[in-house]
Image 1: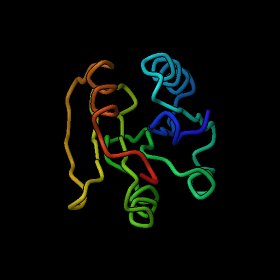
Image 2 (image 1 turned 90 degrees about the horizontal axis):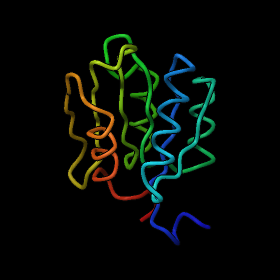
Image 3 (image 1 turned 45 degrees about the horizontal axis):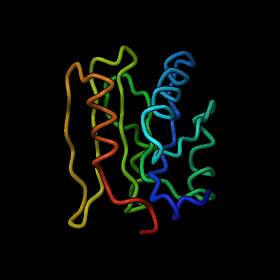
Image 4 (image 1 turned 90 degrees about the vertical axis):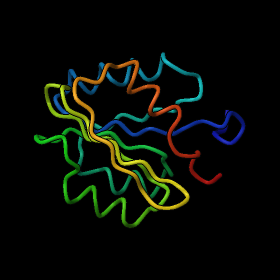
Length: 129
């Protein structure tokens, strides 16, 4: 089924450690039929993947729950892309959401998985819409 047919939100999960990435991938793929989730084991493939597959969201792990500089450059190159930076322990999350008037940033402390899924579901319009 093509993304356009179901209005899917494409989410690229490229975080570490592996256990956390796989857990998040499974949670997202079962949370909503409108999520099309891609899992990347190697963050260095993120730029190439995003050039080949338009995405709405990218989820990364960052020590300070702040988007790494390399990811900031991806956002600059793709105005419709939104991002989530998660601390390794999952206690802190930064959400950078694309919108009609630029990006908004929101920091969360101890966000639940259900809350994160709600943010992703309500976030930016699907890519190429």
